[in-house]
Image (cartoon, rainbow, N blue to C red):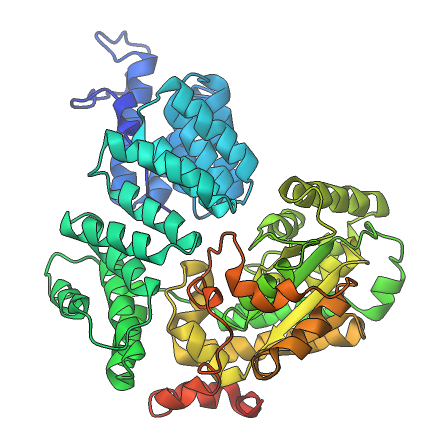
Length: 555
C-alpha cells in the first residue's frame, strides 16, 4: 500500500482538534451532540492521522465507516484512492472517479485521478484530467509536474518541456520541477542539459538522493567525479531515510562500477538492496507458473482457434529486464513503418482483470475458460484501438514490456497474428545487470541474489513451455548474437516483422524519440560489446547467484 497523499488534500479538512464523540445513552436525550457532518469530519481526520502513521488498514476502515454513514462522501472516497494508489491502482481509479463525480470542480480530485491513470498507462485520460485540474487552478505546480511526467511517459517529452518550464516560473524550489525537467531532457537524449538541471537541484538541496541517482545515469565515468565523495558524505547523514539511502547507494555503485572498482561497487549495490526492504515469495510464484503451464495446453488452444483478432499490427518484445528489450525496440522502431511504444501496461491490466495476477497461486484455468469468443474479440479490439491511438499510421506497434513473457498464452489467444520477440541473454550477465539496477518494488524478485537466480529459472521454465505450445512463432533474439553481428541480426528481426529492410535500423542511436527505461543512456550509443561476460567482474561476489541458477549458469 502507499501512504502518499496528493498535494494539499488536507486543506479539505478543517484544522483544529476533532470533536470529542460521546455515544448517547439509550432512551435519553443528548445535548450538544456533534452533528452528522462533524462526526464524518472527525473520522476522516483520524483516518488521515492513521495514514500518515502508515496504519493503512485502520485508515481504510474509518473511510469505509464514513461511506456507510454518508454514501459517496467525496473526501472519504478520495482518501481511499490515495491508500490504494500503488497497491491496487484499479481500485484507486474507481475511488477517485467517484470523488470527481461528487465534486467535479475540485482540482485535487482531478489531479489524483490523472495520476492514477498514469499508473495504469492510460495517458490520454490522465492528461485530460490533469488539464482539467489546471483549468480549475492554473498555478497548481503539482498538476503541472504531473502533466509533464504524463507527457514524458506517453513518449512526448517535447510536450513535457514547456509544462515544466511554466512550473519553474511559478516555483523554482518545488522538489518535482527540476527533477522532472531533467527527466524529460534525458528522455530526449539531451544529457548535458539534464545534468545541469540536476546539479542545480542538488545545489538547492532539493530531492538530493533522487537527483544524484539521476545525475550519475547521464554519463559513463572514466575518472572519479567530485560527486562521488559528495554521495558518500550524504550517506553518512543520520537523518537519511531508507528510500534516500537506497538511491544514494545505487548512485555510488554505478559510479564505482564505471570506474572498474567492482568490489566497492557491489558493496553499495548490496546495501541498496538491504535499504529497499523488498521481499518476494518465490514458492508462490512457482505455483503460479505451474498453473499457467497446466492451463495453456495445445488442446486448449486448438479448441479456441478463431478467438481474438488476427491483426498483425501488435509486436510484443519480451524477456527478462536487461536482456536487450530496449535495444531491440529501438532497432525495430527505427523502421519507418514501425512505432516503438515503450512499455505498455494495457495487457497486464486485462490479465489482472480476468484473474491472472501473479500474486494468485490458485487455479488459473477458471478465468481463462471464462473467456468466450466474443469476449476475446472485444478485448483484442480494445487493445488495438489503444495501440492505434499511439501510432495511427504504423504497420507495426511494439510493446516492449519485458514481463509480458508471463502472458504469452493470453497474447496467443487474443492476437493469433501478433509477432513475439523473445530477448535472451547470458543468464549470469542478465541477472547481474538486473541486480545493479534501482528497480521498483514490482521487481522485488531482484532483492537478493538467490531469489533472483531462482526467479530466472522460473522465467526460463515458462518460456520453454511457450516455445513448445507455439512452435516456430516466437523469434528468439540473443543479445550476444545481436552485439556480435548487428546488421545480420537486425535484418532477421525486420524480416520476422514482415517488412522490407531499411538502413535506418542500423542507426537506431540517431533516432529521435523518447526512451524511459534504465537503458536510455546505452541506446543513445552505437552497439558495444563491453556488457558481454560482464559478470566476471563480480565473480567473487555472486557465487550465491550462480548456485541458484544451477545448470542455467552455463547458458
